Image: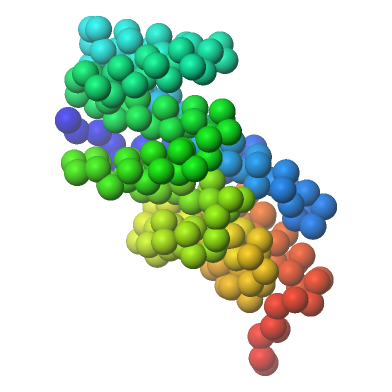
Length: 227
């Protein structure tokens, strides 16, 4: 089934950056990560559904919409049961979309380890479109900023931080946040500077990166460039 990768990437990147982290890290550290995780997890099912809803019809679509409605009503257990059923016997792209939404619900319920495992598994599934796999890896990486190590975040996100990858801005941001949290201010500075130096970085991502660079500079915790 054909779909527009560029459009999907724009939507996911917008979801990743919208309303996230209006902050100064030193004052709001843990709240920043918690808020980032919630936004990054978001509702992948909604984004994916906009792609395929016009191309799919019938029972699978109705079941998926019903599961999303349960999630919106905060009926998480019922929504997870409905999504799990779609994962098992759904058709087309619906099992994949159900997996993504179920992983988001796991995180919302506080099962961070389960959500990370689910998103990582999705990213490794055979036949998953690259753009979906990359989005799943990035969502897992943001969850791990608070609960994991820099190395765990890097294993998921660093391959996405390269110039050719459309998710590079968010990948660099999650790597910078993970490095900062780990106390590696030189590496954090490197990742935030990469965002600021990229002329294609979205303005709000670049603004947050500059705030972090200013914070690092004020702290005196990172080596200064030699002139």
